[in-house]
Image 1 (cartoon, rainbow, N blue to C red):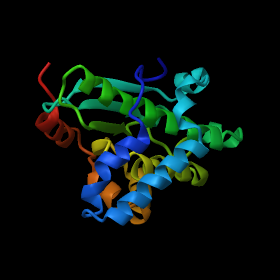
Image 2 (cartoon, rainbow, N blue to C red):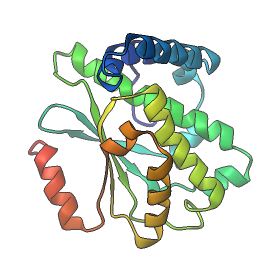
Image 3 (cartoon, helix red, strand yellow):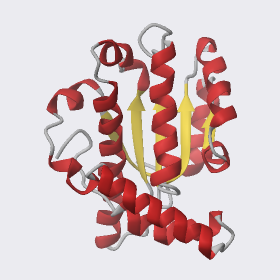
Image 4 (tube, helix red, strand yellow):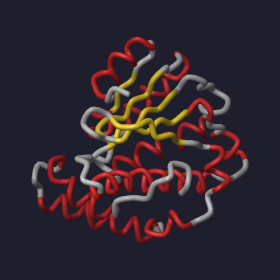
Length: 214
């Protein structure tokens, strides 16, 4: 089913369950966040987003499930360097591409619920952004950067705490300024769960802490 082959938690319910810690039990703030998220889901018809035909984007912007970490959290691998963001932007598909990323979060968070329904203790996932083939033309153009901001902002605003970690690996030097720009404008929660690595051995050590043995 779709590019990752799973289906998702109700976003409003998930926010209701996970907003408390971030808001330090600020009931008013938590309630406001939940209501805004429910409204966002209604305005964007998120409950039916998985039934739409995404076959064209599923082929272009693939996401892989790499198994689970030691705590049973599903690990998602995204080959950002293989994504031609610029082509979609130039073709006037920016809005559809943003909606597609809403779909990916919705689809991925479903896996967490399915794990729980199967008796596994999986309340969060881990997302790994592989930046290995990143270049300034296809992924680093000015309008492309707004897409990456949207991806991380949607996570922070509408799927908070879905991911235990957002890890970007094999990051080339040309991508570091973009990473620093994003960190400066993203929410505190998103920047706290972000982890970045350039050298392969650092990635290996980090993943060994979380990944279950084969």
